[in-house]
Image 1: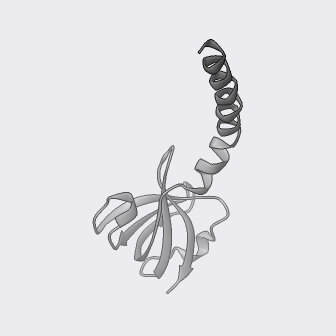
Image 2: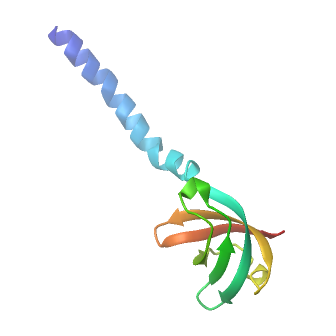
Image 3: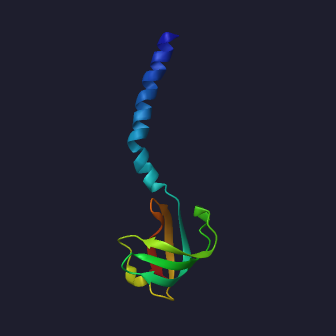
Length: 105
């Protein structure tokens, strides 16, 4: 019985190590996001934020509303003009809700 317990412990250790090694990588790819229609109300170019009215962000558990989002580096901030209709993809990041993709509708 002792041999069985020792063997189980040895088998479990590499599996735990393997999961730990890839855990962060897998988590980055499985992060929840929502892609919805939105209309820009205002933009703060200096702080890379935009006040946006959006459809329900179902995957993030948020209803339809108007709120301020961080627009991450790499997203074309020139798309965010008052009155612009966009399709946006949103995630909940460490600093709050962030627009990670945007394109004209």
